[in-house]
Amino acid sequence: MTRPFRTALTAFVLSTAAAAAGAAPYATTYTGTVFESTIPEVRDGDPYSLTLVMDNGGTTARTQTWTPGDLQCAIWRLDSGGTAVFRHSLRAFPLETLDGNVATDAGGALTQMASALVSDGLRTGQFSATGVALVPPVAWEADGTNHVFFDRGGPGGLPRGFGDAAGGVLMDPARWSAPRAVVGPCDDTPVAAAAPAAVPTASGPALGMAVLALAGLGGLRLRRRAGPQGRRL
Image (tube, rainbow, N blue to C red; front, side, top):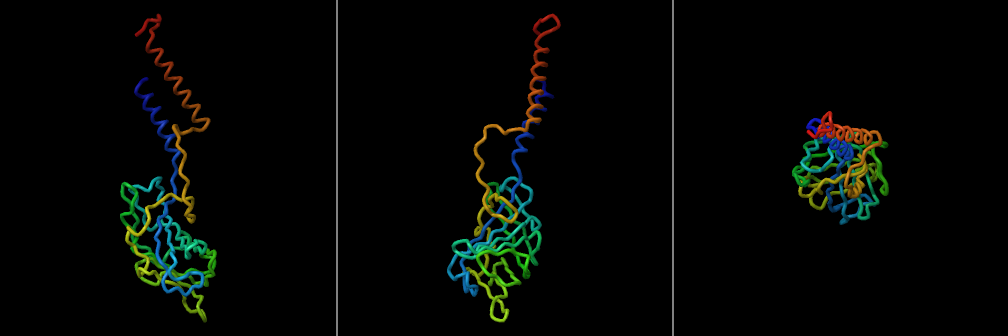
């Protein structure tokens, strides 16, 4: 097999394998404890979580950096059963404050977390909520200060909300989970683990090209091994 053909075939196989792996959004989650809640569906002492979904076009969580512009969505789960859920698309409705990057090391663990994420209040149609009745405007903040989540559902339209028993959503990377691949920009359902595959598959046309290339290589090798009179070279 000549070097040019060997190089071309290697490139073909590598490109086919690369095509089998696609980019995916990644999500990291902070879990806290509800404190001094005035929202009926959100109870003191219950765990709550804030998940950030990010997408920088990467195909792995290892050695990555997500800038503020890569953040896609914020998902709050406000009760212990995970039935009270608030979703805020950061692409459609950007935050008032969005400072700092999110980064991982070679093992995929977080080494850096954004320093401040603050919503200035979302109106009807700018968020979705299930399992909890929220009265716009709804605001939230993750910057290490309390309170962390509030709306205008109090008497006479006054604010109500809850804090975190630790004093706010802590932006220490050690308090956030390692990023994991998820199915969508505002859906933190984990991507199912891929079944082991010995060889990446190729489309019909691509497979046909590979077969023709191998046949050509075989013919070339036979011509090199035999001269005009059938003599071995």
